[in-house]
Amino acid sequence: MNLNIVLFQPEIPQNTGNIARTCVLTNCKLHLIKPLGFSLDEKHLRRAGLDYWKDLDLSVYESYDELREKYKDSTFYFSTTHAENLYSEVNFKDGDFIVFGKESAGLPDAIRESDPERGIRVPMIKTTTRSLNLSNTVSIVVYEALRQMDFPNMK
Figure: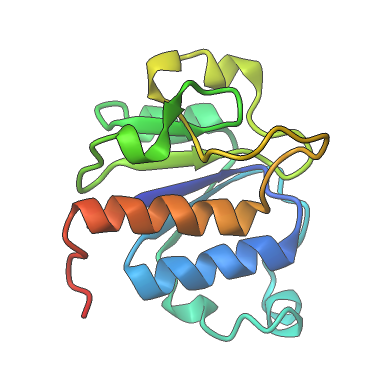
């Protein structure tokens, strides 16, 4: 199974496209929480250069609650600049969910605060800018999690 990557209300199709490509090439499942800032229709995806979309294990949900209800016994981590724990301090395991917020606002307080011990962050210098690009952050966290699992089914 590997990891489950959750994008909460993603806004930028290029970021989602980069993350989808990462998911395809790392055997991760991508979960998208609506509303999306773009269309998932085939024409739109082709225009964005997402020719590998057909190989993606994808689920789309009307709400975050719908996703949590479906996977109520799973472990969820929340990537946020507000977390105390570094992503590298977590012991990821097969089947874990890693939730990332939308580009303009991150994760809502209610999601972040639902399980604050499961908050994780990528360290950055103190700056006036918000954070790393979403697709870069996903890649950093995914590869650390897969490294911990000895890169299952990867060469």
